[in-house]
Image 1: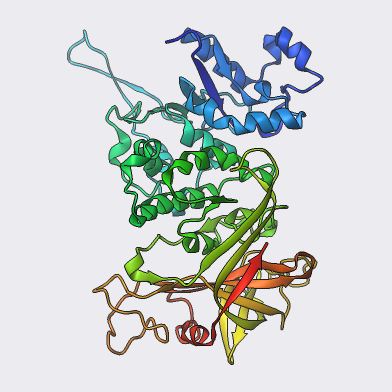
Image 2 (image 1 turned 60 degrees about the vertical axis):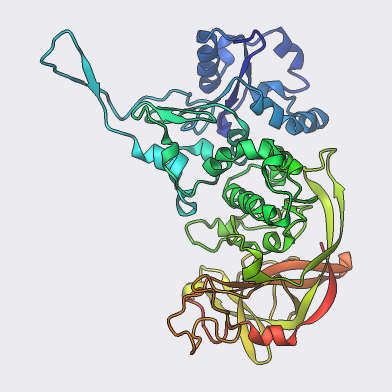
Length: 502
């Protein structure tokens, strides 16, 4: 170890965080901090680092002047370097606040076993499958089930975990060590890398070598797809994380965006890349009831409506499909933005995207609440040529809710912009019939994997531009009405237009 080596602490502040550095307390902090004033999580982290023979630990509450906007912006932009260059990151994984501590009392005791050979002592404990699955092998559907790991639900900690080269996780039932080569724990000395779940974080870390060396990716267009697919899997996972201030969503991801910048995937537009932009614009608010914080749904000030980062809700993306299976007539013509900080991958105060693509004009129809439950949001549709098409509003619509820029009213005029179409199904490479995608008489048993996403745009007079208010997803979802959800009618009425979206 070097004299300059340090450990970075990753933890939840919670409501108990009283020890911070401010303009007023900075002189005292430079003189020293009384040991009895240090909260338990920080206390245990400092003691642990001292036992390792190290002299330095990085703790955000103390190393950033919390009420100094300039210092906060400067240090927030340096998060990538702080966690990437640490000797390792100590994660207080199961501590909900700074008063709880890093190393929690175990509820999975170790048992001493009696041996026929008295000179040997053996110990046994049950394996910790819950921690393994939740932290390393979980799928998207279980990412929200993290009650025993509160630190893993936080947005800022997501980036800290991704950027750290080595992490010691202090979970409620065991310690786990993760580095670029292995993931190992107390109950399983072999690498947990053999578990191949749907975890976007593990997938990212497996490919970190490629991300640090762009020459390992092909320079032709096909190289964009695995990179964009990886980005979207990270963003989808990240969008489930919680923030005290959701305006931090972009800046808390800027370190990861900087890792993707050398990979020749175009310019960065407030959370999306200009390459394969049609895939990234086709995000949908996650309507899974288990994932919803629906009553808290709102737009994030300053964020452009066309970006996933504009709402404080989980978002979902489809897998990126290869060019032979899809077709798009969408073209990004221009992008203008006003940055909120010097960091080009950080937050924006204003962003305007100019697109060219097929459009149709339609009107809004509001239906009964979802699942006929009065406490659920209203269903929303667009009406075109005497047919109605179900939309997923970016912000759920409620009966008698206060009016906002995202409110939808019956007979509101909207424009619908085609993002892309699926030409081929995955089974037997059969053509997808846009007028009858589920029930093609020539292929009655054909299961299609397809999608026809259309953005729903509403005119915003103050901006002299459109705002995204939702999306129509024509997809292989049996719960939808098959006839009404076929996109053929909209495709035939579409005309090419240029639209500005803010």
